[in-house]
Image (cartoon, rainbow, N blue to C red; front, side):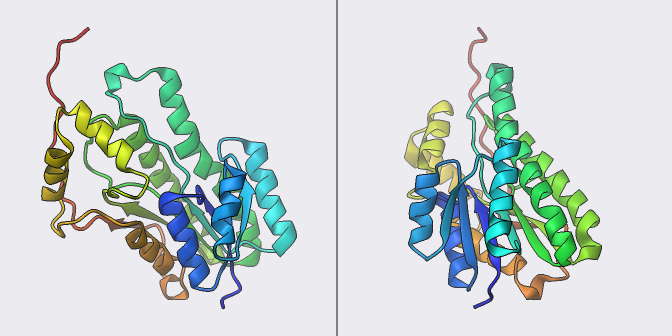
Length: 261
């Protein structure tokens, strides 16, 4: 047992839940933080952790949630930012409100949580921060708001890595590849397939052609990468983006040309 205290935002389901389970299996006491406090508690109960209601978009919710964990445990050793939402729209069809909502959850959220744990970790002169980002450097149709938000978090990650390095705190990004069916992500991909005018079978075949390993990413693949970067063996790894993509080489799927309204 490591005795370390870990917080996983967006940890009630999907990738976040798998990360929480892995950290618990490795001996950490895991606090599952999610906007749905009941779901967070249910997930945490399965491995003896604790669940808290925390809205990453609200400064008071984040600050109070982090303060509560510090009050109960006296320390926070690991923060994993996994809370996130998606929007399947072309730039031309995205409203300002929709754009802002994605940025509030995906970019403002990690800023608030990282800020809340930074000084406690600096005082302790130890800590691990991991931001779940995305594969960078490729355009992805119908995903502009999401991709932009994740690029913002990557910039935050790099800056924090430099700011906190002398305090023994590492800050890294982990970028999942296409997380496949049966993981809570299937509806998102089916929506994209429909927008692209493809059957699910044709869409899946197209996606798998871009992944040399030949399969979808699994939440356990992402959790394994997180487990490494929070480990003592990764003390010299900071400011890095760990791609868990099966060798992903680019999307190669463009939206159909349609009449412009």
